Length: 472
Image 1 (tube, helix red, strand yellow):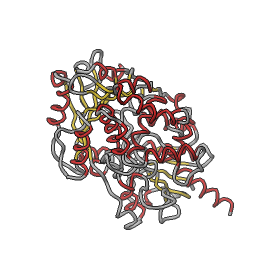
Image 2 (tube, helix red, strand yellow):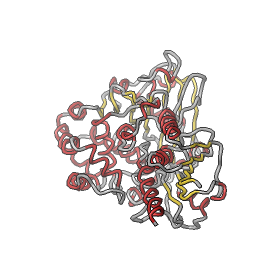
Image 3 (tube, rainbow, N blue to C red):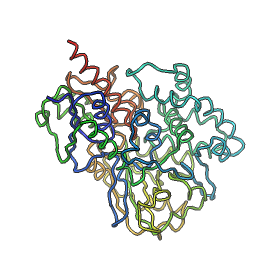
Image 4 (spheres, rainbow, N blue to C red):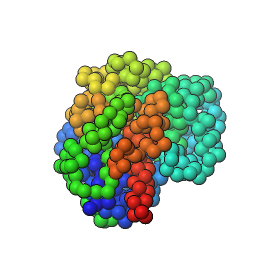
């Protein structure tokens, strides 16, 4: 009998498997798709030689992940590539605010009225970042805080809505960039703890940047898989699990799935009936005949570019998709330019480019024209560079990854109390009503992102259960 079976080979499932295997437990992973990776995969979606990331592409939480930093993933081919600028936020006048590795450079891009306010916001936390992130991402009950004072101070700053935090800034350049940071979790700007979301992304950039993985996001998943196999774990792909009886006998079953899929497979009835799924995304992967012709020079050097004319425009787009059940026009866009620093992603002189906008959950319309009109506002002539595009609205996004219910790439609405308390109100969010069944997906704390910490936290709950069984 195996010690643990993992269902789902996304970053969290693979991390949970590695954490158990390197503590001596026997582990097997079962994945329904023909490749590992979940939201961290790379495919030729448009033309031969153009390697795209169907979901995640830039990885501020990956390079900063407390658990990834304990693993020798570089030995298994993972290499982080840093663009000149982690992120830029262009404006229609041709200027841009930037999120730089340098706090001073970032502050200067906001203008003299807000430079000091930004430095005062981030400076108290940057020197304590590693411990603070570990405490923040290990909550609620998996470990005692290493620096409770810093964590409490961060909570006082970040727990209020981001709209409160943005009152520190007098001009909209800083507010727009910060609003865009919050929008990465598709949460309306006025929600609880959205200030913390923006802070985490900003501090991540200053600490270690927003890199891409050489060769694509698949490199992260492949490195985790290779490490797991060296530890004695096994991985089975093309293996769809519809019920627990489809799996080999094990002392624990760990699901890197949505809560509703877990309930269906494990026979947990209505355990997660109140779990909410949030806005979906409409995503386009482009093969381009050259770089994006951004008007703002800073955007031409940035790995990630946020596209939204103002904080009000970004807030309206988020509200439209999350609260008003309509596609925003203009949409707020998150875009990534991997081949700026990774020429292996496209043929010589060409580029891959990735963009998505928020839409209502399950929306089946076509946002292509609205996305490209928005891009043309900030990069005139963009359409002339397009060689091919691969579009994916919520139904296609969900078909690529079953965890993205209705196109929700956060695996559950990251708004309200569910941003902090997921998948339901519990001191033990990784356990379920079945004593041998656990959940480790992005539906559990600390939530969405390619960081593996949900898998790490769940693995701690599992090995405690397994060791207590051994001691009886």
